[in-house]
Image (cartoon, rainbow, N blue to C red; front, side):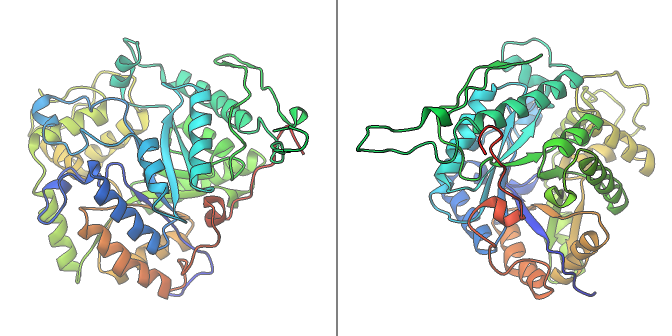
Length: 443
């Protein structure tokens, strides 16, 4: 396969360290990898040596809403809070980006603006904000609410939230802090802007009590695939984390978001679409498939049926395991994209509830399973055919699954000329080829 002048971008999905339910039980895996700083430090340093764009942390604001018998089998029940961990990891790395998830539904703009500005300064310009509206209904109960905020309302708030946060990041001109010992002037008042935002959802005075971030704004990541999610991405995102099931769905999503980006008055090359992809590397195709089968064998049915319930937004543990998924499940306020995908999978492959649960209980998303050469073929095809600008790599088990990617797959991608040999600069914006935003209040 011929090489392309276009370069892949690779981020590593690291919270949880693996999306596969059986990962922590795999022989040789670190069972405590999600909550062990020594291991996480090792992981990020290996990823930086391999020139990954960023270390990406998802986040949950509630323990997963599943029965305790299933919950007790989950390796995601505990994990570090993203900002705390990434702040620590910023001090043991120099180049790799640090992407944290933060909710626009259950946090306030001033908090988010301040935390990300701090992380960007601590890391010398490597922070990224993954904007989420929070899909787990259980989160509401941890923030004084009995019911989850309605889907469209969450996205309406998110759009205004973005405007407020970026406005707060622009509170000071880049040269506002003169720190003139002779005159006793620390900063120039005329170079400070008071936001005084009063909108439909939010009221924030400002200014932010921290200097403008090194990158101007941390890189903006967006993780929604619904209709409002795609539009929010087109208007605001610079990286899109998504989960298409196959290359055809990915091409459609890619074209749609890029088209919306142009319609929003932005350049399509300023938004990078990085589907999540489980990567399992073997010495042969048979060896790679054997690893996956072994990995799936560690998924307990209690966890599997609980995962199905979460994806559908309703408890399905009482359904006939060997019957089809009913078509008249009750409507919920959970993620519509997730639910629609599960229902389509069940219908397309005529899976029983048990089969569907076992598929979801391990990892049912996009996967590249094979030798370094065949996985690289797949990556190159997606890049060349306009299905992705790169991938958000998820690992099957750690450390070995991560080591296989950085030691075997990355060199093959570099040999083909579709992945960097060295970082392009020092900031995450430089890695992605993104411009530094102009301050909207100061030329």
